[in-house]
Length: 207
Ligand code: MN
Image (cartoon, rainbow, N blue to C red; front, side, top):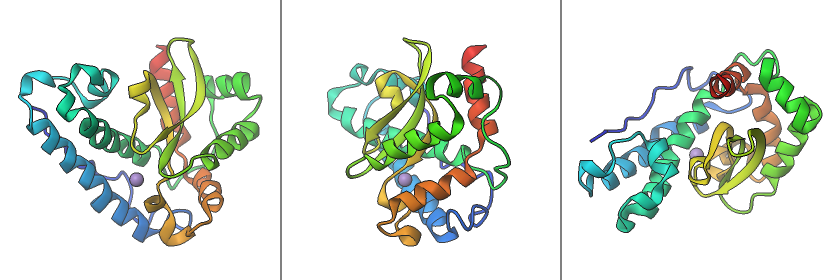
């Protein structure tokens, strides 16, 4: 069976300062993300390997194929594992430009322009009650990009949507530095989004 591991961060814990502080990054990665990794391995260990030969994104895309006894746990820990993996990968200390290429074109088509896209994303993120995520996803059915939110650790893959960019809005993602000022965290996060990464994810879908 596949054993999942905590992915290394592609930058140092303090690299995203002052927007995301070192202590938050360290606890978020070493403690929270590790807990999702451990929970996922433990849960999948409870069933035999034949049920899960695929990678977690495929499993999340078809949760009903799993034994009911572990479905909720795979949804939570598997979503938590994959959501955070994408979250780290989509951040960079060198955020020098906005979206480009086909992603920029698509944002202009569906959101008018980048500034308006950021406004709509931020509003959507602010609308989350309790813990959850805000996402830019690719909707394969309609061949378009769109914004969605998911509660808890639900992954867009469970909605048959492909995540391109995700923002963690659990309090553990920002509370040490921003306390109740969630909008300040969202505004700061825009400064460390890795648009090259998001653009690459999007381009690969179109090829
Ligand atoms: Mn988190």
